[in-house]
Image (cartoon, rainbow, N blue to C red; front, top):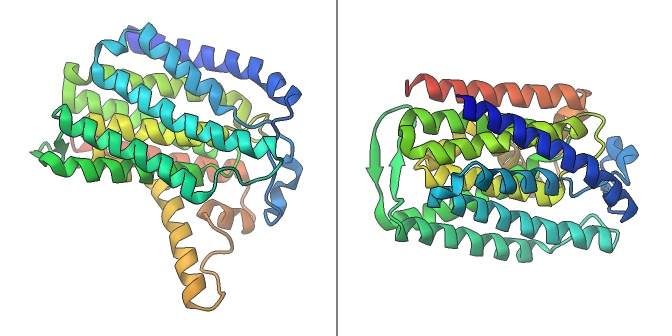
Length: 319
């Protein structure tokens, strides 16, 4: 337990220090967020530094080997895949601020990068025998063999995109991710014991790093994580779950990520089927609630509470 507490304190402290150092650099580089014209409530946020995800991704990448987590190959590879997804996000963010526009990489370019990373993750699982799945709410495990390749690839693409869509309000994606990784770390501990210690502790590293970042990201945010942060978090969320055999838990622990993704899909389908009518006032769903008059902090708190409750429910069945 002492090691776990130390992990949280040091990763949180390092992330907070990196944020404090990074924000003035981003301001000087004029790496400010360009706000979409139709999100009128966010007009005052224009120019707020983005790419703050560099701080917590870097903090996690430094703390993981510092605590000996790379002794477990799965943890080392998980960091590599998380960093790879963050690199795609960084490229997207760089294009945005370099050309002063809200859109960076084109959709097909982003999907191609994500698909390549996702397929590599799937083949890694198959090659290294990480093909056993834990069935949610039970102690049952099944070996799905080569079927892990498409499943892992789907989880990676879905997680990165859904976390990216959830990053729309101050503190929202970071706080939801904090509870996701906290629950996942506990789940791995109870299901895998010492064999999953490194991946469990990697989840705690990310919890600490996100806690440090949230000092600067809660409403009113001093910095945004950008796609660097959201795609990186999605990569870590998928990697830790998939490599520990808990791929099926991603949709449960990340229920609010799923809600964000599904709300966008439903909005598009409904809009096309009804000739321009909208199912929600705005999608993703958190913008719908914002249009209804709910504050950003209240929405972030509600999303985090639901995520924490989903985690506790999962843990209740594996004790």
